[in-house]
Length: 469
Image 1 (cartoon, rainbow, N blue to C red):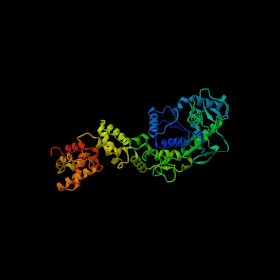
Image 2: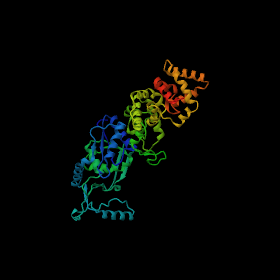
Image 3: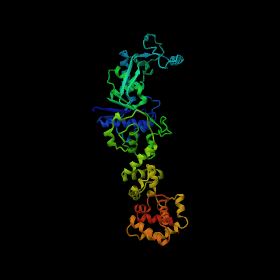
Image 4: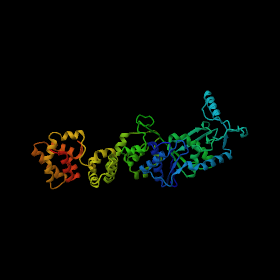
């Protein structure tokens, strides 16, 4: 397939959330799979609710997810002249009409139709009425003439054949009374002008697709292919909400998830390739197709996301993770770690990343490699140094300086020999030593920690903990 053009068109009335991010991913993958173009349009025609902060968050979220768009960002609000021109064309062709209803007229109509048990859509009162009857002080809207009889069919690339009786459709407003275009008109004009061939979006837009198709046809334009993907639900089957994890993409970044893990997770929300769970971006581009998107709602599962993220952490380059951890550490502590500390962190990363699910966890576990002396001790670490702990470390310190080969094997042999001479178990030496070197009662293997810290830093930290013992 050649000439594929997809688009992601968020409204900047809120941040980029999981559902929107998945829509962007599916559009991006479909375009990349077919060697096409992926466009970004900010649908900011609702000027009262659109914010610069939301626009910035959407752009930042897409950058973090590494979903690069082709060409410049299109802002719908800058294209109003083309939207108005399209409405005027429809009006001139007799496919739209001016409606002079006041707010009071519309409210009375709504109440009347409700009382009659009818749908509260517009009653088409001005569809065949002579404009000469228009009240002089009412600025009209322009409404589209929807078909009145028969049925319409959309062959959706995900939902299959979808049929609606035409008497179900309203004569929607194209231009408001102040001359500004509505979402429905603007979307059609922009999709045509941008050359969009495939509209991939949530199934909650399915009924809109019929109205869009009517307008495309009335303007003599080709109708793009539609693909309406299922919604995302929470584990309980209810529509996804904040209590399920419907947070902004920025929140997932801040919680320590890697972009490749989030992409992999979003890909598997409603799409499958056999039993494959771990799917690289390259594989996703090669395999992605709309025929593998299911129709049932996908279920959000934080535990599965954690599991995927842990996998990608283990595979991530140590230097990349070290930079990410150092950035978070600096933001929390207010100080930049020095070069020696960064080097220690990178050396120790293999033993750290296998124990973490997120960058936040990794930073907590790795902070002792970056921390300045003297270390702050957790209550449990301080307890390990109480009693015989600190005096024992004071006796150990000279022996550490005499170890010839500073590697895990030699360090283990030295500590075992020291424990024998002290008449205690290895744990009675290793536990207070762990507290001294990490400030905690938990860490990677103590010999690994000593090897990563190096002779000088290890002896210095032991000296701090031993104090005046």
